[in-house]
Structures are given as C-alpha cells and as structure tokens.
Length: 283
Ligand code: PAF
Image (cartoon, rainbow, N blue to C red):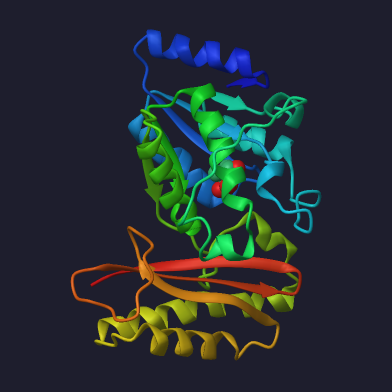
C-alpha cells in the first residue's frame, strides 16, 4: 500500500491509474476505522481495480463547540487495517495541505442542507461538500462509497455530483450495527458503559417506527411521538430530532403514502456524545 500525503502526488498517481485503464474507487473517511468503513472498502474493491482510502479529520465540518480536537485518531492502527484490506493508496493530507493559507472557496449546498442535521450543525454540510468536492478533484474516482448512517450527507453529495457534473458514481452502503443494534460509529468510543447500554434504544425505536409503518400507520406525527416516547425511557438520552422524510428528496412528510421510500432519522445525545441513526422503510 502506498501512503500519500501531498495533493499533487495524489493527483498525479490517480491520473496514472486512469491512464493505465484502472477503475478507481474512493472511500473518504475521517479515520478511526471500524467495521462500517471496512464494509465500504470491501464494496469499493468489488467495483474498482484500485482503492484509495482518504483519512482526513476535516476541520471545516466541525463547529467551534464540536469535537474536532478530541475526535478519535489512531493512524497506526488504521494503516495496518488498510494494509490487510488490500487498499492501493492511503491518502492522508495535513490540514495545511487541504486548506492552504488564504483558502476561501467553499461548496455550499442549499435547501436540503438546512434541515435535519443542518438545523443543529449549520455549517456542517458546507464543510462536507467542500472536502468531498476537493477529494473528487484530487483522487478523480470513478466511484465513491458513503455509509447510509449519514443519510442526509449521502443525499447532499449525490445532489452535488449531479449539480456540478462530477463524473463519479456515488454508492451508498448499508449501516453496520453492533449486536444490540447500535450503529457503528467512531464516536461510540466516547460513550460511558451506561450510555453505551442506553444508546441501543435508538435502533429499537427505529424498528418500532418501521413496524408501525408496515402495519399501516400513515401519520408521521404519531410515529415521531412513539419513537420519542421509546427513546425517553432511557434517562441519559436527550433528543435533538426525530423526523420522517422522503428517502430520496428529503421532503418532509406528514402523511405516508403507499409506494414511497420513507427515511425515519434521528439524532440524540447521551452525555456529551451526539449519535445519529436512521432506517429506510420501503412501502
Ligand atoms: O462521513 C464522513 O466520515 C465525513 O463526513 C467525510 C465524508 C469523510 C467528509 O469529511
């Protein structure tokens, strides 16, 4: 596995791969890899000849009060995991390499970036879209993998790719879960043992939402109320939002109609740790 930290070297290597007819799959990450990332890498291997994994904790997607400084990092462990996954290139640029002095150009997704996560993290998707656009221009991938856990992120990136004519196919892979259903996340490490136990309630509440929809409940308000009630059975949980949206457009839904894919998503805090999760219900 080749390790590259310079933008120009990465660009040159990607163009060389393309010239020799190789299909490039990119897995953008912020490191501290877990089974969810590994599933994206395995998917990338299936659809490409050369797999590039980027590890970059992107400061522009964190608000000043968020966890940029304490975001978990373990580059040695990540590197050895990537070695054993048969990754072609690990791209690990520094902050200065990605955001040189005087950096002032951003990709700003509109409308769908100000709801759900965007309501609680106003500059978050500007940071995500900007770094993903840069990574696409640097690694020039034929395909890039994202996790369904960040459902809104995937939709925003697909929209960006369409709007700005990137020639990259976006592949969204299913959420990987712990045995008790908690979605795998680098941030789970922050949870105390009690909070960790309580956090399993999120998946249980989403399962209930799915069951209600399958049984014919059409009112989003009724479903949201029930999900909130279930989460509130855990004293450590503080809900930011529970929402029901169209899974493709993210349009808010009041009455669920047959034949639609429905995204039930939520964010909740357990102590200082903010977790997100979601489920897509096919009607
Ligand atoms: O999902 C993530 O880990 C990040 O938002 C991403 C896509 C790597 C951009 O920094």
